[in-house]
Every structure is written in C-alpha cells, then in structure tokens.
Image (cartoon, rainbow, N blue to C red; front, side, top):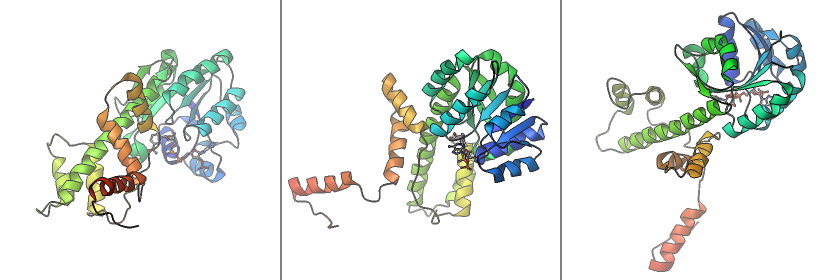
Length: 298
Ligand SMILES: NC(=O)c1ccc[n+]([C@@H]2O[C@H](COP(=O)([O-])OP(=O)(O)OC[C@H]3O[C@@H](n4cnc5c(N)ncnc54)[C@H](OP(=O)(O)O)[C@@H]3O)[C@@H](O)[C@H]2O)c1
C-alpha cells in the first residue's frame, strides 16, 4: 500500500523501517530534515513539508501521524485537514486522549475526511517484534488499511476496537495496567533487595520467566536491567509519566470504579520526583506539635 508518515522519532522511524521491509511505498515527513534523510536510506520517499507529502501520495490517501500527543498532534492534523481531499484518511498512532478522537472525527466529517485512532504498543522493540495495534474509527476504513496494520503488527497483533476513540481508550487502559504491573515488580524487587538472604535479583527475574505465574515481557526487561546493573546504582529513582496513567485515573473517577492499584502507581511516580515533600514536613510538624516527637532540622 501507500502511506504518508509524519514524525520519525523513536517510534515512527522504526515503524517506517518495518513498512519499507514489507515493500509499502512510504512518503515521510519530519520537521528535522536529518531524520528524513535517514528514512530515505531505508527506501522511503522524502518530503519537505506536509503539503509536499500530500502531493506525493495518490488519492485516496492515508497519512499516519506519530508525534507527541496534545498540540503537536492537534496542529499536524489541523494542517493535514486543510491539505487532504474527500475520502482521504488521517491515522493518529500517538498516545492521544480518546475524547479528542471523537471530537476530531466529527470535525473532519464536513470535509468527508476519515479519522482512525490507532493505539500503538511495542516501544522501541516494535521493529523486531511488531506493534500491538488497538484501532478505532469507521470499520470500513479499518478494513481498507489492513495491509498496513498487518505489516506493523506481529501475528494476531491488531484488532478493531469500535467507533472513534475506542482504540486510544483501550490503549489508555493498557498503559494504566502497565503502570500497575511495573509498580508491583518494583515493590517486590525492593523487598528482596533488602532481604537478609542476600538474594541474587537478576537470577530470580530469570527464574520467574520459567513457568512462574508472574512471568511477562516486563519481567524479561527487569531481568535485563538487573543483569546490567544489579543494584540499579547507575540511575536515579525519578519516574516521569506521559498522560495515559492520569487519564486512566480520571476514567476511574468518572465511573466510580475503585482502581486503587492503578491510582497508587501513578501517585508513586509523582512521589519519585519529590526530593523533599511539603506533606512529609507537615506530618513531622504535626507529630511534633501533638506528641512532642522529635523533628530533624532542615
Ligand atoms: N516511545 C514509546 O514507547 C511509545 C509507545 C507507544 C506510543 N507512543 C506515542 O507515539 C508518539 C511518538 O512517540 P515517540 O516515542 O516516537 O516520540 P519522539 O521520539 O519524541 O518523537 C516524536 C516525533 O515527533 C516530532 N515532533 C515533536 N513535536 C512536534 C511538533 N510540534 N510538530 C511536529 N512534529 C513534532 C519529533 O520531531 P523532533 O525530533 O524534531 O523533535 C519526532 O520526530 C507519541 O504520541 C507517543 O506518546 C510512544
């Protein structure tokens, strides 16, 4: 098939490589010309602007957007909407908020443009393993784009989820679960790191990959990290989040669902960024005030 591709970052570049290896014609655009040159070495067709990219595609066109969620994605889609023609498709493969998808699909309807939200999982390993794709939008358009999904995904690794937003909704929950699973491993391994048994953590991570109930790809990654740096001395315990965990918690609040583990996992990330918290000082001050318990001076 033929595809326009915007955003050649950690995800986009490898996705283009996978598409090229399966002989799709991919016209690429990125605001950094150097990465466009890199994609051309993989046989992609270069473009110098979105307008140029659109001109190099045959109607009905399909353009995959793989840039950060929020304004970068919003602005790219806005510009594309002004350049594309009726029956063309815009695919958002980034981690957009699912409520933005429904709005965008409606906004694009008067121009008779189609919109597909493709929740994409696989990170930097996707080139080798393939990307798990959770797809929302019009089912007929999903079917039209299936050769692209088939190339990007591993076997049985893509599926239609429902109307606009369903793909990103499922991806959001996927990432919420990911936060919880990672937190559970992190706490278990911290306990073992403090055990008087002097446990070999990389060995345990490896062992658990063989027949244990908690074996998983995240555990494989944990094993690899622990083999490289058994006490994790080379990195700081500072953990960012990129939105989906927060949106999962908003969803739990909207639905009155007690998503305790997912919420605690997000808050633990916030906590990881605080060197000295106001709340901890407040606790120390209160204990001192009511019980005379000693405080440490700053
Ligand atoms: N990394 C993951 O594991 C992962 C997994 C699933 C989904 N995602 C999602 O996939 C999308 C891309 O992620 P990534 O990890 O590939 O990000 P990335 O490595 O930061 O790459 C982002 C790309 O978007 C471009 N870009 C940034 N701001 C832009 C703007 N305002 N206008 C146009 N282009 C802009 C960047 O160009 P420059 O290089 O010039 O900055 C770069 O080519 C995001 O929505 C992310 O949440 C990521």
